[in-house]
Length: 324
Image (cartoon, rainbow, N blue to C red; front, side, top):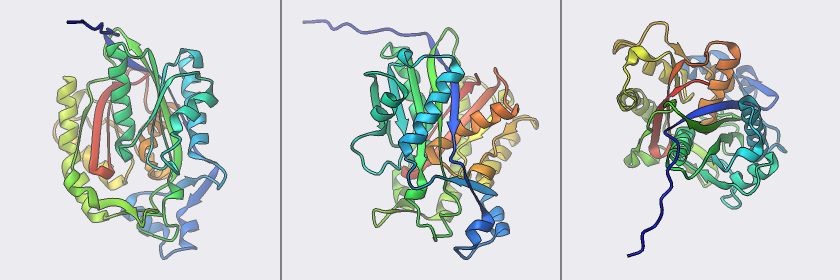
């Protein structure tokens, strides 16, 4: 019997650099109140958003991904030639063919990489990070660029106050490489396919979600998943310096943080609230929040961060990372 050769990779993986991109156009709650029945206080009370960024008509998902990916490489001090795999988690490409990843890689200057898109909606970045880490540890890749990118304004009814107030555009990226010590824990992921109808594309055009059903699911199910992530990483809530959940709704973020603190997380645990000024950017929200927090100085190199994404599918995933 012929015996096939297997590769062996690095002992562990780490995030080498991060980067993000947002469009210039800022859309406030007052701006939205001029085109739909809403107001600033109504939006703040329900989802915690103050403003968000909308891309113009000519700016594509691929354009934003290129900017975020290039910035992650610069942050890591890496050359595009060092990257052998590009993963672009997203759920808003205008069509499934061609994928975003190959286009993004070519424009950044990454030549002939493994390149694929990954659709786990708002959990996409954590799914992509898990795949990247495992590729490196198996020896199938050496450096993987993971870019969560979304142009959600193309997929939202602009006068649907239940959804148009929430979603926004942007991209966030991380370059993942080898490490002697584990800086990315095993991914914990799963799905609740019996609830798939709570978030879907209405008339194959616009995102629709059963807001209350999704809110109840997220506020009851995500904290237990976060505890599973900590267990897989071999740490306790008190070890967590930073909590970065998917920026879906500030009330959901606060509910997760409250349950972690009730289980022993420290009062000084930093909790991401990027949704206030970025809105919900789906697969881009976690890396974007991480990048913004690093730039603001609220996250420092070496901090222990718990990240967890959740969204349509219903899919979820999370890891513990050591911040670069």
